[in-house]
Amino acid sequence: MYHLANCTTCQAIIKETGVDKAGIDMQDIKTEKITPAQLEEMKKMAGSYEALFSRRALKYKEMGLKDKKLTENDYRDLILEEYTFLKRPVTILKDKIFVGNDKKTVQALKTAIEK
Image (cartoon, rainbow, N blue to C red; front, side):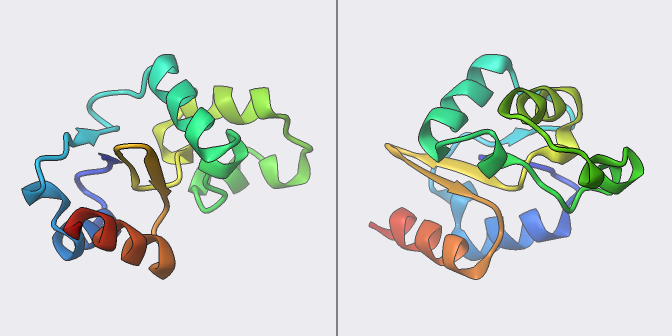
């Protein structure tokens, strides 16, 4: 699971799903940056870099990105450059990826862990 240790949303999802007790490796993306290889694996599973990109990040507005037409390479570079652009948390469980914190995604992750 790629997460932020100090993010209350990530903490709540970890607690709710039991990810930490399921033997899943945890990577705090603030202290241990995402590698290009890790991001590439996520992209293959999620379908695009855009699917992994968070438009909620404060820097998204600060950098004026909402007014720009971003390419897949832009999304890739931004995520690698600034950890806050990764939609969190991202959990890879066997051959499935769970991206973000919406209720359906969290429930699907919880169900997958319980199996």
